[in-house]
Length: 78
Image: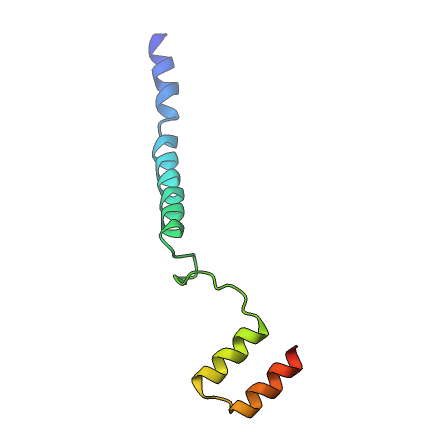
């Protein structure tokens, strides 16, 4: 019965739309991550670790600490 082989093949046709949708989902996840976003919606690039001296320099530049405080803290770090 040649039609039996056709019936068997049609029984497996449901898997192709599923594989297509799964592949599309993986593609979209990779694409979104490459564009700078992640699964949490955070699109900022990873920050490099700042040294204590860099933090101190930034605080002094912003005016958060006085010159005397800056020099004392700088001496403590050295």
